[in-house]
Length: 91
Image (tube, rainbow, N blue to C red; front, side, top):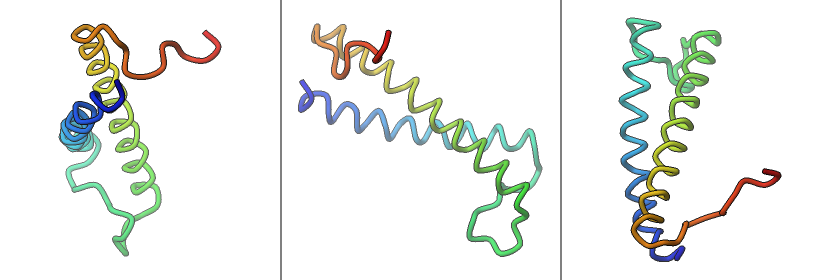
């Protein structure tokens, strides 16, 4: 099942990354009119850089998690097999 799901997961991951980038850009525009600072920018202030990295990380992780879970659910409905762990540990 893993082999069958791999290309689906890769494509979904690429789409999730694109959507997350667009979502981050829109969300950052609410906080600041300027582009978010990058770690390699010499004049980037630490508070602004930290805020940008935190928001970007949260948006990417949230988007990836939602898309991955949704794609796995769709795959399971089509094939009858869940491509991954059946349940979270301890639940």
